[in-house]
Amino acid sequence: MIQSAAPRLTPAAEGRVAIALLLMPFVSAALGFLLFPLVALTVEGTPVDMIDGAVAFGLGIGIASLLITGLVALPLLVWLLKRGPVTRRHALLAGAVLGNLPWVPFAIRLLSIGLGPEVLTGGHEWLLGVWRAVLFGSAIGTASAAVFWLLAGRHLEPESTTE
Image (cartoon, rainbow, N blue to C red; front, side):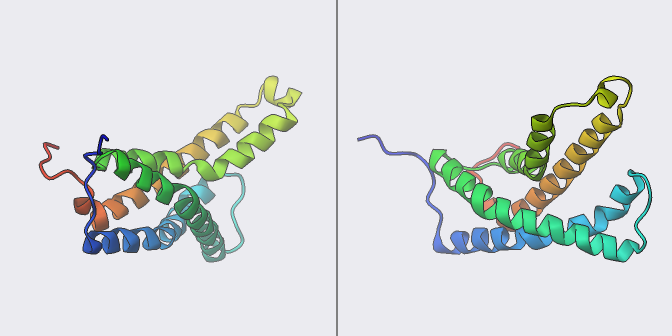
């Protein structure tokens, strides 16, 4: 029988990881709130009340983060831990990818209805919108993963790192 060389987390390390995972929706919501002015500046028109818009955007990001953390990030972390130690690079890359998951249903919906002739005949605004969504998703996901790493990373890294 071949045994994995994956490190076992101590109960204290498991607690730190659990706390870090529980904080992710709040961190993502705060980042969404703080980044909302950039979102508002990159679309046509402005909200009537920037604070209300920022709160709504932050709450939406927090709810999406709650779902992604519970349904995707936690199983991904368990899988990575079974394969070996998790590095900072793993965490940040996973954050960038998982930060873009909320846009996937919208992309599927847009692709399912097809691109209209107005998109094909001259409008590049849809491409800029996609680019903006990817940038914001990557920024919020990577920043959230960085906070996760600050809270729990030293418990996940291999004993001797050269990074």
